[in-house]
Length: 374
Image (cartoon, rainbow, N blue to C red; front, side):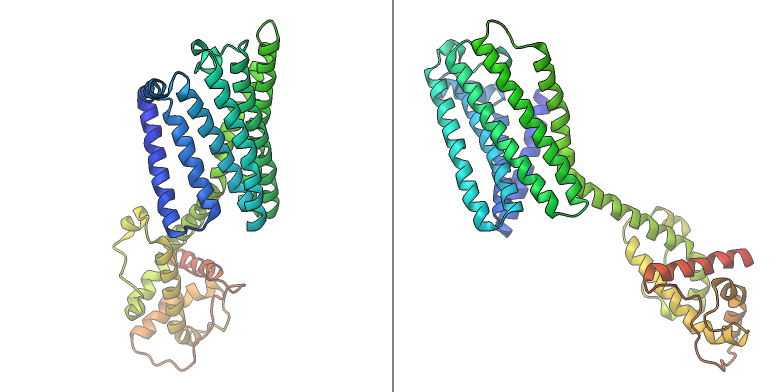
């Protein structure tokens, strides 16, 4: 467990350092400030779970200090999350005013749980939630007040996240809707905890097992969904980028038969260094897009250069890829022999739309027809 906590702490440190660096580049970005504050408060709340820090805080400030600090920082982290979505979904003036108003219930809750901790008997302070003595009024007030604030903050954040989702487009909107649903689930889980605490405070026994299971289920679904929602837009964009990368890489390789012929005939048209070989093309990862565009352009330039010789062989303007492939080798031989061209350049293997990808598809058709006619 200590190893996991240390790794998590290291991730928090790296994330905070990265956000601080971003803040130095955009110091007036209020949304970025809120995210940074959320990370700092979450990391601080998490760090109080380390036994050495917990013992040190309790020894220096009194029993229960570590638990109090952990909960105050957690409430502040949720408030910062709310502030982030406020600045994302509303104009600057309205978001700033609403964020200041939202600081009031945070301050009130922090004062209430601090008073509850200070006035609670020393023997029941700082116990984990599962071991808390809810028949002690101060303990019950501590947890009820904290969870009521979480219900309010999470529900409000879910509402503003949903509003931001309606203003966004896919894939961001999809991720935001998932995030809004997860926040609503967390709010519902904390609301059920309030019911459990009130039952434990005023009732004679523990809360019904169904409530406890419902809370556990909601958190088990909501927390991963929250992570998925925040990660979804970036993952979707990476997936779309990978699909384009894979398409460009495959097209680049499929153009090789055509490119080999044209490059041998017109080496002066090369826009960059010559590829090292087929096995290197099969394993290359970087520079795929640049190589793809370069190969398409070089193939098209080569066809333009050889098109007058294609015309002398009977190929007409606007000829299909199959017609070009059928006469291309003979045209290149005529060009290499120095036979003078008596016609102007032709437009052959033209795409149906004005885009480099459509042009690439026509050139691939020429390359594949070349292989069949070899």
